[in-house]
Length: 259
Image (tube, rainbow, N blue to C red; front, side, top):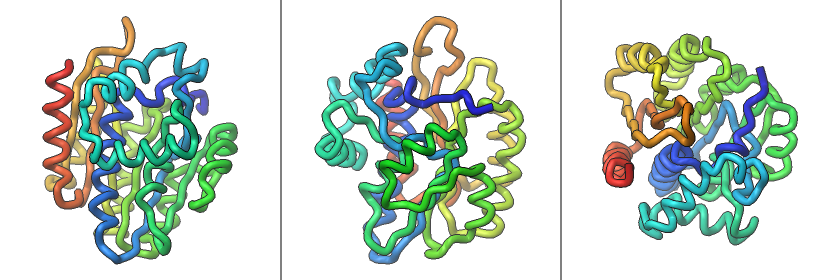
């Protein structure tokens, strides 16, 4: 199944949570002079428009990043806010970056980026904006398994599936376990939706049992519309960079204050 299109959801509250943690992690990791590798298994199109028909149809960005910016949820010097400002200078005031362009803001000459996207239309759009990276029109887990451990060995992998296929919940712990055994120093970050039916719980229990020192960050929010099943956002991070647990706690408090 390849029906998922993130353009309808770009800039929602789940993106705010995920991207704030991603930006904080990369901000810390790129302070050291050593080069790093950045990989994504489900990169999407890389750049979205918050005035697009898709975005206006759901209103998720209005209730997400636009609300957060209007109400000052994050300080102006937050890594995500800095990345957003630079990207909007380049692409316009209504632009919202996917994780690849957030990563581009932090990556330096000598760093490596590898991005996979299987959806043909999304891959074509990604290719137009991701000249800084090597892009792959293939299954992202296959790419990660083939490239890990990457060179440079220091680095981060973001796994951000659409979860269109329910079997993903059972397969992901196995995939992460295999990658972690090959790349024991890699920062491996997994985004997942918090759903009313709690179908994510067994996956997280398996992951935490295998990797008890991993960071588990979860925030809650109201469903985007009546009947919508997502009631929060989760990020699970193996080998979290220094300070990321504190950032996760700050975000949890911010979301709680604005529920």
